[in-house]
Length: 251
Image (cartoon, rainbow, N blue to C red; front, side):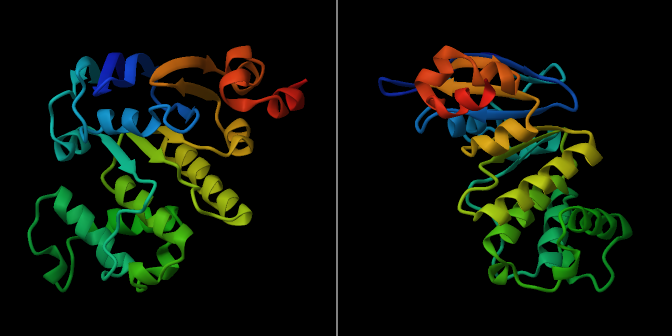
């Protein structure tokens, strides 16, 4: 579904993406891990068009996304939620969802309709329900908890009906209970929507529990790919990132 071929990006003398080649299949759930500065967010920025690669290809169902604008890439089916939630703080949850769908459908003035079009309303309602935000529909985004703001950001990406959803550190800044609530929602979303989900995460307990496939980046290069058990026991990953604790847990 998504094929990344020989992707390269440098900033001065620093290679943030160094010949990355990966395939993400339909319906897959993949974690991207690695130390700070490994190139994880740069990798997402290249896929979504926020950055243009120096070389390489990014194919979605065989169509090259390189050189396209972020809105065009989103319309083709790649959605993204950010580490810092990208929301409209003065709008209610419901208004935010309607605005996102309206922008996608290129229908100007949708917030000023007394009765929004049925399709728009249905898509917004479904995304709010799936992410557990329906009972907070009339709350302004700025008054939501940190976790609910991040759920709203994911809902904004989901409402555009992506084939591939990228989540940049969905549990960042959360306490233990809130982290697990978030990741349970991510897994539920993946199971119900049957879309491909790729997420960046630093909490290895979360990664090893829910991700069937893991990609390890280090200094812009792919250090390893594989199942949680294979990654736990990979000597290069242990040395570069995990240390001995998670390796010991796997034995």
